[in-house]
Image 1 (tube, rainbow, N blue to C red):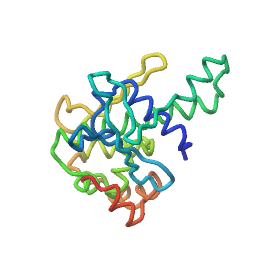
Image 2 (cartoon, one colour):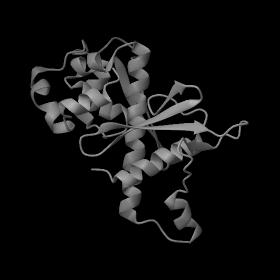
Image 3 (cartoon, rainbow, N blue to C red):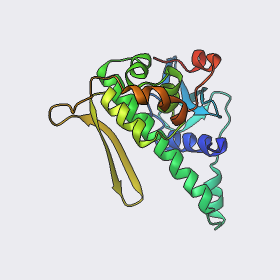
Length: 211
């Protein structure tokens, strides 16, 4: 399980880098200048929601509604010349990949106009599992990525650029391979959800539901 502090730090960094352009699924406009951060925390991966606003006069600096401001711990360590622990760096990379994959799944799902519940049905998952994935709460296995690609009638691509990774679900270049009708094989439906993602309880399903 990811260290929750590192997840929150990653979200804060996303917001610092894109204060006015960070969008769904990680930031949602609530109206009257108030927005809401949305990300997954904890073992069950329920949706965490944090309201925030933007500084006036186009300053572009994200501030919490409670007027609290943050300074990333990593910036402080770098300024002090303290090297990052290799295990912490590895966890940071996993968290970054989880958020990129969540964004890719969300983008493809919404471009198809289907709900989380429908994607879950097609991929042999549950709606809370889809919600957790889209909110950066897990790194799916390769078999699950394959099922998601079939369910969304897409080709999954992962491109490496040095230390950077780009993941996308793109339109199929030709006829869909056999078994892409959206229904996973029977053997996958039996075992995959329990093995590949933590199933959320009923309360989490109500909290995390966005589909």
